[in-house]
Image 1 (cartoon, each protein chain N blue to C red):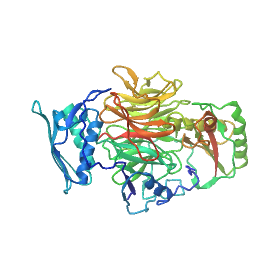
Image 2: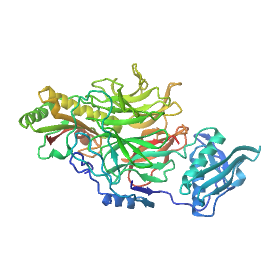
Image 3: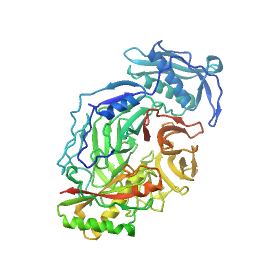
Image 4: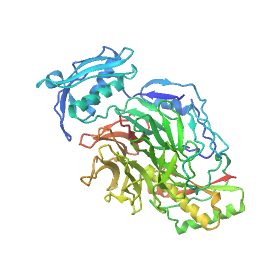
Length: 399
Length: 196
């Protein structure tokens, strides 16, 4: 059994704010939505539920939560949070044109009020905007607290922070299994860099790769059956695919004198984007795991590293431009490669949120590193981690 | 010191000071769910004679790993047998590079001489990077540095079976300052010796 510490940076607000604003931001007009007609219990859990729903809707980037008079979009219904099952039955309607966007009942375990609110927010986003939300995603990352590095997870709003390991040794790069049940990460727990799999329901860890030399940089394919990682067991860091069910290892690259790192699967599992210095400074390349020559996709910037291939087909990565690290998005169809957030700080290690709009990354300013949610459509970056420490290497779960 | 890897001190004090500090530093503690305690021991890895203790976490090591690929680096050393009183100068590297500089050759010649005189000693070359760049890329770069030193040693007659590599990436700086004066010292390969 695991020892799990649950921490929350949230102070529960008892009142529901009712700001009226039609926001024109970098991401364009936002839809005003009214949640005051959603009945919640007069309890702490009711206040928490309403606050989280409101924050999630705002954080989705698509809405402003307004007072009743200002909004044509109305969320109505009832949340039952203090029974043996937490549930919410809810409609989303348009006052003016009497259109019903959504009529849905969502249930969760009674101690999962936060998750219930996150899922409701995602349902509202999906039914009104026809795009996925990110509120129910979980974020895995590395925390360094008092010099000790460990693996943590939190919700997409920064709440529900849980430490998963207590190894106090360097660890790197968590990656989710597609169903969100397990995580992959590299750790020096046993003195050498090994790749582990941790099952979140039992906290049981399994060694996936502990060969002589380097074992690092894993990513799991969308079918959950293949793990790509960097191993040096054959005398040089190279990319390998581990077929997990068969425990079979296949070598992908054969490049003495060249470094391969940070592989990430395409959503269809047919290609892998990775970092290589085969043409000089580290740049992004794409290879087909079944064979063929890799092709280089980035040229600008003195360094292009840490790619994450999103479900939307776009690749987000870190680029060094004019001495700063910035987040860039590579779009294969348009062959564009544009920086997202630039405010003088360093942004690194991006991971797509499941909404395909936001990116969670590590932002460093004056040698302090925190996780931020960056909007590729232009809203201001939002700080995710408030607890004392340095927070790096985020990875967002698919749901 | 953050790292105690390789010293045989991988046990973690479950309710030790850092655990309590973490609780204090976080803004609001909602609850602590303690499981059945620290009964977890990871199973022994084949070839390893020492098992470490884990705080309530069980590690499963499959008996056999991978396919039929030939392993060309030697098996890992027993982390308990570290020799701490033998220290050699670290080999330094250029930024984002792992080529051996002429200035570093003598350091490796001395190590080779020591290994020749000490038949029962194994060497782990530990590759390190400065803090700039991505942590994962630096893991691979650090391994390249360690492998470059290993290749040099093997080339001048040290048996390949006596030299292993380990990368710490940017995780183990000798100087934590954020300046070139520190970075040039952190781009290095250290020599760690073990009793066979």
